[in-house]
Length: 191
Image (tube, rainbow, N blue to C red; front, side, top):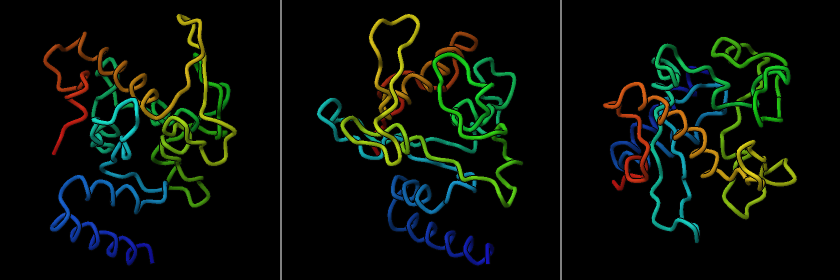
């Protein structure tokens, strides 16, 4: 059955790729997976039209590269799943301002393959657009960083910028010629 579903999904993706272009393929690919299959590509900022940033394009993100290559901030190891999927770890493992843990065991690719493993939530499941209440939460998560006095509402844009750009800037300090994007135009590319 899984093979049949995978073949069907691959057929849909192939048709979309042929007729719909890269951005459409990435968006459809992200929608087809249930959170128990690691996607190769994901689209961040799928609905960018907000009053704050009406001109920001969606951001293609290679989950496959970040999950398989030495893309850690020190460039010495593969990123652990919880670097981005921070709720997918035990409460005792949480660091800094992180407050929410939804697993008793650290998320790994091997854990995700277990039949009883919980699916992984997308970033946007909790970190929604400004003014949009996340399903299953009272509000968009909010934290106060140690170096800041006011609380920060972690919308999807805020969460992506804090997590992704902070890591990319660390990489740039080690390797100035890296392709890790740190500017608006290097992520939000018009296609």
